[in-house]
Amino acid sequence: MAHDHPDTTHLIHHPYQPPAGFEAPQPGVFKASTVYFPTVAAMRQREWKDKSAYTYGLHGTPTSYVLEERLCALEGGQQCVLVPSGLAALATVALSLLKAGDEVLIPDNAYGPNKALAESELKHFGITHQYYDPMNPADLAARIHERTRLVWLEAPGSVSMEFPDLIEQVRICRAHGVTCALDNTWGAGLAFQPFDLLGNGQLGVDISAHALTKYPSGGGDVLMGSVITCDQALHLKIKLCHMRLGLGVGANDVEAVLRALPSIGLRYAAQDRSARALAQWWQAQPQCAQLLHPAFAGAPGHAHWQAVCGPSGGSAGLFSVMLHERFSQEQIDAFCDGLKLFRLGYSWGGPVSLVVPYDLASIRSQWPAHLARGTLVRFSTGLESSQALIQDLAQSLAKHLSA
Ligand SMILES: *Cc1c(COP(=O)(O)O)cnc(C)c1O
Image (tube, rainbow, N blue to C red):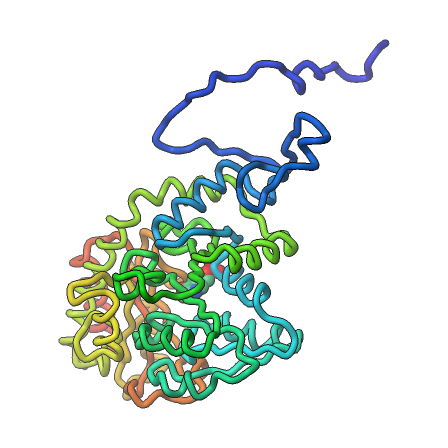
């Protein structure tokens, strides 16, 4: 019988199978929506929840399983789900654990979009929230009540970089039997171990959410997130919600993260070193009213940073500077615009240094007593030399913010 186009059935159902046993530094990239079953019986029996097999691309592929396992190794966890962004990781935790009538507690210095999620979608679902003072564990304890189901932790807080008493916060959640989830994007599994904060296996968070967009990707070119746990029942709750929401990640993006992961320790340490060099330089500038970098003595939460990261511990390539309140917004904007190596842009962890001025008054419930008045500018260091970055800061400072 004649076909109206060339018959390529033999290409689609080609019998060739490459030999097994291919080994190379990077795992293969498997892309699938459909996954085959040899028989109907196998189709009915196959189980994806325990990762013993494959049923559908959305439920996992060899590629996604490999990244999940490596991220568990990075963060010291046991189970992992991958989601399309860091924010999706935060949302997946909330939607997995909260229902109408429940309450979530969020630190006042949390990643802004996590607060926005609570103020909009969660509120519409009948889930209430309160913001607690990240620097006062007693305030957290006082806000926990019988409807509290989830406490978010962030160390340090976004933008203002205060390091909370993470150990005490987790103890409070334990004592009240409330699940605690850490946004571990800054620590990245490198600065401290979220599931083993004391180093003796006695205390850790229940959930670690991580924006892989930052250090695991390292390129400024991938959006992805992970939710890691150490408890099979908790993981299953999250995994089922994740499955019902249809949150898949693209195999090429997984590949990009797998490719960057072996160098994460080197990049993190280099960006940390560079950030400290810049922060030290800022400390000597009269325009700087306050340095916000948890590894620096005198910065808010420095002792708490030491307690979980160690006295010579790691710190990400991220810090903020409170510029003196005598400078106008226009002057600060001109200073940021005048930088040549630092680019204006959100996110961090990539090769290019970034700068963002923030209006802190608009993102905090009230101006914290431990922060100087002024305009906050956040810097994230890329992989440029710290001398070149300091020269860049100095030239724009001299031009736009004269002491
Ligand atoms: C960037 C970031 C996120 C969100 O990550 P995206 O992949 O951009 O959605 C969440 N938490 C923190 C602390 C972050 O810095």
